[in-house]
Figure (cartoon, rainbow, N blue to C red):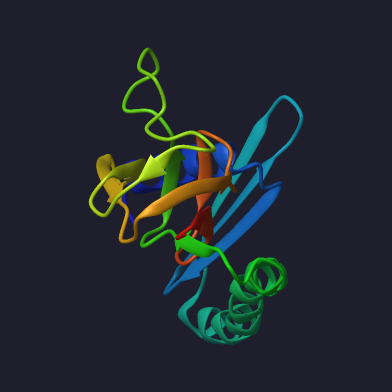
Length: 161
């Protein structure tokens, strides 16, 4: 992992609002802690023998982390069975506008059709337009502008009728 990747990781963690992130790979261990006014980043070189147990300990924590956001999303879908949920196809930063001085792509109550751009998700400095796969009316925007999103995270509720 080079310095650019570490800097990008720090920026992403700062935007996400997480208070602490630990990352362990091979012989590198990174801990990023964000506080009220300051960010503290620790990068440590671990001995190869210590890396293997640390990775095994980190694996269960990593497996539990994605499960937590998926659990609250499931009840929201069951309450709104008549709506279609548009989900994020990638991890990145969610933007409702093409640029800060432009209007949003869609608002609540807007009619959309297949192929209409709903939002942009920035991932690794690439801006990916997310297009609608259904026609209908936007019922609810589930994510705030400039917020980090995860893979398969619900973004919009669409009424197909």
